[in-house]
Each structure stands twice: as C-alpha cells, then as structure tokens.
Length: 383
View: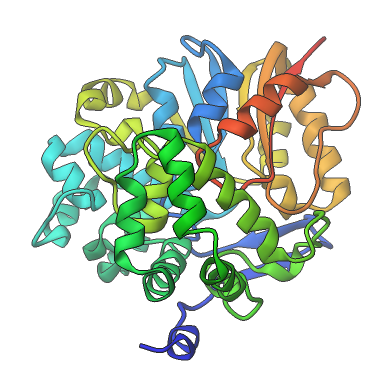
C-alpha cells in the first residue's frame, strides 16, 4: 500500500458542528474516543486521596472515570456534551456489571473472541434505551472490540500503517525490548529520531489527514513555539519515547502496537485483579449528557471535591471558558482539586479562588505517559 493510498482511504471525519452563537462550544455527535487518552495517573496525583469524595469527570472514552471508581469515591458525576461518549461509558459499565471477567475482556477487545456480537446481545437489555439503540446499529464496531470503536482509534490504525511503512517492524519492537533508561534513550537516538519519523508526523498531522480521524483541526488556532503543528506533537512524542520508561506505558503500546502488551500494562479497570472492586463501585457512577457548564449550574455550592476536566476548554470560546470556571469555583468544596489540560489552544483558569500548583503541574507534565498534551495543570480551590 502506498502513502497516497493510505491518505485517500483515511477514516471518515467525525460529525462536528460549531455552534458559537448558542453555546460558544464545538458540538460533537459521533463516537470520537472509545478509549481515554489522558493519563489518569496525573489526575490521581493532582487529587490526592479520593475515598469518600465527590468527583466531576468528563466522560470521554470512559476509561479514566472507571479507573477513578477504584479509589472508592462517594460518587462520580460523569458528564459529556457528546452523547456517544456516554454511550460507550454506559456500555462498559453494563458489561462490567453483567459479564464475568473473561467475557468482559473479550467484548472490550483485550482478549480474542470469535463472536463479540453474542456477548453484546447478552447484555443489551440492560442498557439505557438510547445507548442500546446506538450500539444495536453498530455491529461492526462491536465486533472489532469496544476499545477500538472510536474515530480517533480508527485514525491511529492508519497512523500505525504509516509507522510500519516508514520505520519498520523491527525498530518498533526493538523500542519495547529496552528496559534500561540509558539504553532506551540510545535506541531512540539511533533508530527513531530521524527523517522518517518527522515525515510520519508531517503526514499524520497534515490538515487533510488529522481532521478525518481525530478532532477537526481548523478550530485550533495554533499558538505554540514550534514552527508547525506536526513539530509540536513530535517534540512531545520524542519526550515520551526517550525520557519516560517504556515498561508500564500502556498509552505508548496502544499508539505504536495497537494493543496492550500484557495484563498488567493497561488501564486499572481493565485488569482482572481490580474487577471485583470495579463491580462493587459501579453504582457510585452517575452519567449525564450535558455541557459541563450547564450541568454544574444545577449543582449545589461547595459540593464537589475533585474535577477531571480534560482539555474541554479548547472546544469552548473564551467567554464560555470563563463561565465554566465560575461554576467550578462555586460548586467546588473548599480545598477542592482540579486537573486540567491543554492540547493546542492555551487555556487557564481565570484569577481568583482557583490557584495553580505550578511545581506539581510541571511534575505531572514531565511524567505524563500520553504524549499529546502540551500542559497538564493541577489546581486547588482556596476559599
């Protein structure tokens, strides 16, 4: 397959609308993420102890929200403006509630299965009506494994084809064989930091490629220091491959290999050792399809202890961002913790009661296992 063929056959772009007049926010209506691509370890370090606390979490692919359940919170409000993101979270929750672990893992796509549709049909009556309607109409997505059903995950499949073409299978596998940090850095410098990888990033993050498989790029007003969109992502990618241990980085395995390497290198909620705890805590999860600001407007003052906000403000106008943080400040309990990210567009909490822990933010970014974010910020509400 040639590069031109892969570009022409790239997956269709998600259905996206921009509705600034009504909401000041990009509206998404198809399943963009079937996995969560934010490192939950960053959020957990920003939050500290979450046992018995109330959390607000952007649903996204549902992985991080389900990971948070393992910490024993009192409740989690999982909120997403995109109904499809909640459909995947609801399906994961129903599968965990009603399937033994081996069948759950098979339906998710982390174990081999001959008939995932049969597994889905065994639990479909336990889904909310709209969630069932959504998945009933997508048998091919189910058969692939739920973790691979999103548009972004489809985009990564094509990126991996380009990677294998330009870099070769031996170099890819060789990177994962290095367990010593010095040897890992040396292997990257000798075999990865080359013109082929820079070409890959120019192709993958080209305006005619990236919008089709990930989010629509033309609402990102690029303001980073590097000279191009692709260069910014390559700089982050280089840091993760060179400076963060390969062992345990399940994000990197999924990016480059399209699979998790072993049963202990994957999100915690997917690991069999945590399955009983996950099932025990599922009733503490409440799922809402709404804008984050609108949802918080209906929540009492001082009632939320932790906020996992992803990078949602990059889908908002500046005025809408101000409205969101006003509601975060109002609904936050004294001392509440916030984890917040930037991808491309610089966004920060406005001055006031929300204070950034700059040293912790720097530590989180340096240790972040998912290379795509330019900033990972830890805040605390002081009031």
